[in-house]
Image (cartoon, rainbow, N blue to C red):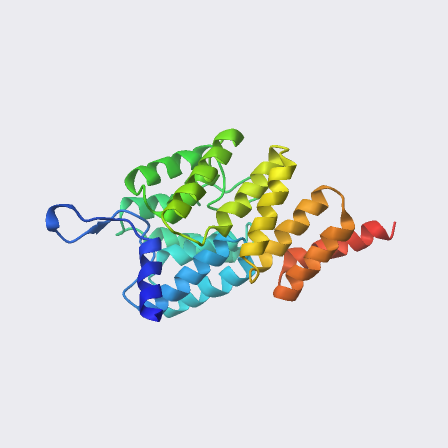
Length: 265
């Protein structure tokens, strides 16, 4: 069973051209080396990152680069997770730039997302505008890569387009029998909040929480919904659930401190 899960996981994050009966040339992001155990670590890092469980993601990506210092993609993720303008951020960015030189075009595009820091000094894969154009190029070359599909959808500049693209992506994955769609549902919830579709947002966060009870971010997202509505009691209750699921959930701890300060005024 473990070997089967491993093979499925590898397929999740690869996109290869198998035409002409020749050795497939990868067109997606070249995340991996040939070590199954190293791949498992990278995949777990990706999953935690997609679920905004950044504390856990950081641990997995750090482990990945310690096991294989030639892996560029974990450096991209570590740069995106590092504090803005920090030496660690610049180290991981520079390592990614160096290590990607002999990789395929989409791998280079992935690193290029870090080239321009945002207004806060963060080098991150998140963002829109010019970054949306990079994701457009990436999905054109690797249209079936789930990681690229997801962040391509999230990078849509128009909110209605973003919601529709995320909804279509989730529907397509369900039709394909894919059950690990909580990260898409979570991002849809935040998009619904932004669009002031609060009933849809609440339903999305409840669905995310119900189907992902082991993910601390599912409780954090539900808490964020209530905090946005200034329902501090429910918000605090769900932040506590997030901390119970993972005591290292820094955002939940900070928000509880904020709520306590609000209640003390």
